[in-house]
Image (cartoon, rainbow, N blue to C red; front, side, top):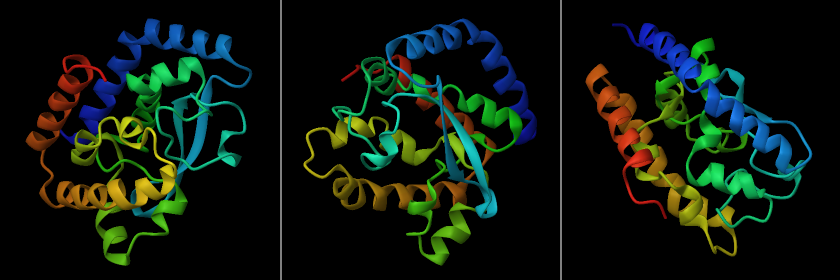
Length: 201
């Protein structure tokens, strides 16, 4: 089964099966604070092509003007429901729409904002942007609860740049160079295990 066919079938099934959860989360987000249900942000996809990513909104309206794009779990911009969604990765579920549309894949380097892409070297761009970004990958498994790592930092953006981003770049490059169908299946299974069976922080 080709990767694109896999993405189409399972993103459609995911959206169908998870529709009750998606509707419940959408209702809670709308109820919890003023603003839209979804966060739509610009991300850079394959070959540097920008696209609009879908997430459930986890922060207050106008949060982009108040701080960086990598919030710790104790960030005051997070709403109460947003903190819960971040902790259990539920804010990422709408990205199944991006997968169905062909802008993302289930497995691939996490899509970055233009600011971080502009910081990449030409070699990093050539490798990482050569394939579609994904919902999960090797870097996502290593950095599964990024908000917890950044928790308590006096300067979350500096902490991200120094302690998280270099390893993410390394693992993203490693995935691209060694990608295969079976590696994708392994990453998906490990992601499910981390999400549902590992102890929560």
